[in-house]
Length: 265
Image 1: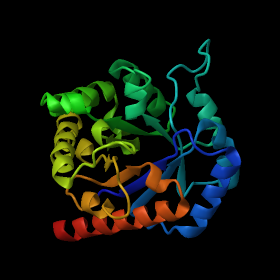
Image 2: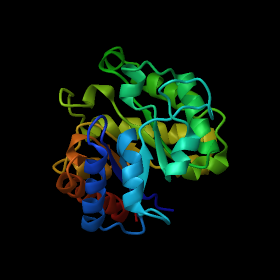
Image 3: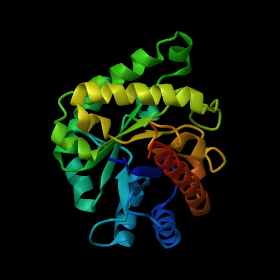
Image 4: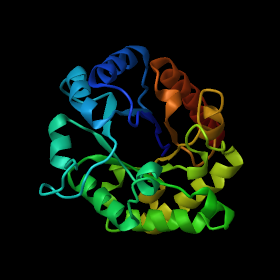
């Protein structure tokens, strides 16, 4: 069974509620999403209600994602956002384990596992990020790092929940304006490693989990990554912060994904 093409952008700490709602409206009018594709956006928390209002009721053709969530249902956790709050807004997807949360905000693997299980327990989808730093890469422990993050992060996940799990491989050394662009030769071995580990953990159901790549992706190189056998989509940053850039990168990645499926077929 062919895995879907999954694509979206993390807006990080950018956009006001009005700007995010306008972005969504323009994007919804500009993009075509075939049956074998999934599209998402991660606006900042303050924009979620405005985007949810713009989306309206019913199934969402473009998934509305939250950039983070806390594992507890409620309590004395100043500044945190619960899954109950996100569910009330109609959020579809929660980003857990993004590189900036791991390294800037020092979120530990065990904490991220609690978040993953809470998101899935609330009936939402998750995009779970894994990836090594430049230092870890330099020491030759990229594989060990990513496998540790993956195994701890997905510990206790029920195989029946895997249809709501997506994995993002984000080499920290390739993220952001100062990152070193990764090549397909860098990415495919790590994506294959993740695919094999998912199979070892969950069997055939694990091998069907979509794996996205994130790190210095734009329309010029998107297809080179999605044409890889084990990359099913893209998590982009700044190239997806305008509707024109979002759509151009999405379309380039979709073309690569279709090419890969034709070659496999």
